[in-house]
Length: 368
Image (cartoon, rainbow, N blue to C red):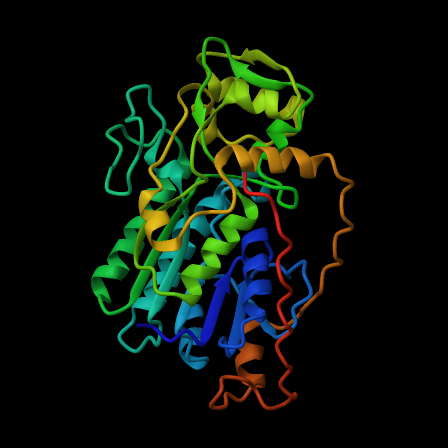
C-alpha cells in the first residue's frame, strides 16, 4: 500500500489539475503538493508549490528526485483543441507523457504511484462497435484522428510503467465526455448553441460524467490505492435527441453524413465551438462504456449520465460566477530547486508552514 505524502500534479493551469489541487490542499495527510505547468494557475494556491516547467523536457526527473515525490498525477493531457495548436497538443500529450513516465520509471525514482487521466476516446467510434466497451476491450479499426493515436501512445507508456515497476500503484482513468457549470468543454459549447446540431438519420447513444464526479474520482485515486484501468462515466445512457429535450432546445440535422474532415472546420468557424475531430463520429455512432469496475472499486457516482445533463442545464441557467484572478508565479524549475532546502517533511524552511484549510461540508444534492 502506498502512503501518499508528496504529490506532483501536471496541468494545474487547466480545470482538472486546479480543482484536484484545491481538494488535496484540504487533506491533512498530504504533506506537500507540487503543481507543474508551463502557465500559471488561475486559482489561488494555499499550500501548493507551483513550478513553471515543461514536462516535454527531461528536467522533470530532477524535480521528482529532489523533492522525493511518491505520487504523480498526470492531469495535463490536452483534450480540447482550442487549448493549443495541433503540434503543441501532440508534443504535450505524447512527448510530455513519455518524459514524465520515464522519470517515474527510473531506478532511483521515488515514485510509487502514478495516476493518469485518459479518455474513452481510445475505443474509437465505428458502426459495428460493441454495445458496451469494457476496459479489457480494444478497438479493431485503426485510429482515425491524431488525438486517438496520441492516446494509444500515452496508454502504452502507462502500461510500460506498470510492467517496469510492478510494486507501484498504476491507475489509468478513461473519462467520458464531461459536463458541468464551471468547465468549458467541446460538448458544453456544442450544447450552448441555439439548436443542437445532429447528423440526419442518427440519434447516438451517449454518456457523460459530471465535472465534480470526475474530480472526485481523481482525488480518490490519489488518496487511495486503486490500481488498474477504469472507465469513468455516469451510469445509464442518453440519446442525443433526449439531451436536446432536457436542455429545452430543438435539434436540427445540419451536419453532413460524410466529409466531416471538411465540414467540421467550417462548422467550428461558424459557431466557435472548437468541436474536435475525434468527437465528430460520436455524433453518428455514439459510444457507451461499462462502468461496473469503477463502481466496484470507487463506488457509485453522484450523478448519472442523465443527471449530469440535467445539472448542466440547471447550472447553465444560473448567472455566471465571477472568475478568480490568476495568481501569477515567476519561478523557473532550476531557481526553484536552488532556492529551497528540503527538510524531512518535504517543505522548505524559509517560510512558516501554513495550516491546511478545513474542508467545507459539500452541499447536499438530490440524486439524479
